[in-house]
Length: 228
Image (cartoon, rainbow, N blue to C red; front, top):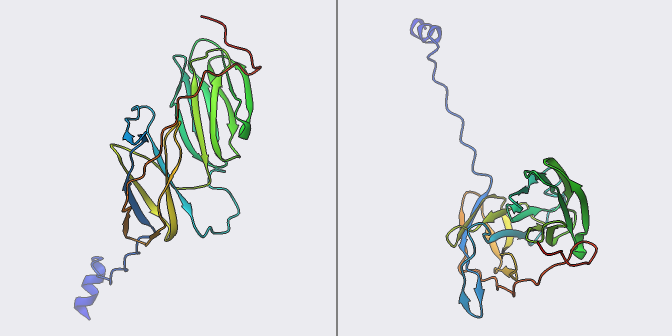
């Protein structure tokens, strides 16, 4: 008893350690290459390809995966930065103006047409993306400004780097992986099963197919841009 009292007095009592919690999610890895007419093509460094997961047995949910998310696409040097954003449905995108000139952000895409009007340098204006699809975004003043916001009904999105991708903290369940690049089709994987604490590797490389570069767009009123 005397020895026990001494141990307690010095705070050296060793209690059994609590068991570590098992990892809640799994990891999905794989490879992707954009192809055109059967040949691999390089994607620009500032316009990477992306992958996202589609649940095969969706869980009931009260909110959409992007409802509390906000991201930015900056207008800088008469360009959008980044040129591509892949976001969960419900995400708000803010368009700050970092130039010392006016811009006018708008989208003619039928799935989600919007017009933020003209505004000067500053924190910018925003738009909440409530419809899935590939939404092209332009400036009504500068014809070379183009961004694409791809809106997906998924909480698991990752860029493709050097042909490879990794999705982490994926809840156990059944999914398909979807690969995409701007101006390409989507490429869907076979069904996969994700297990907690395990890594699932796609057996086959994803091959989104590049489509022809879009033709020149008009201003928001349908008129051509004036020459500069």
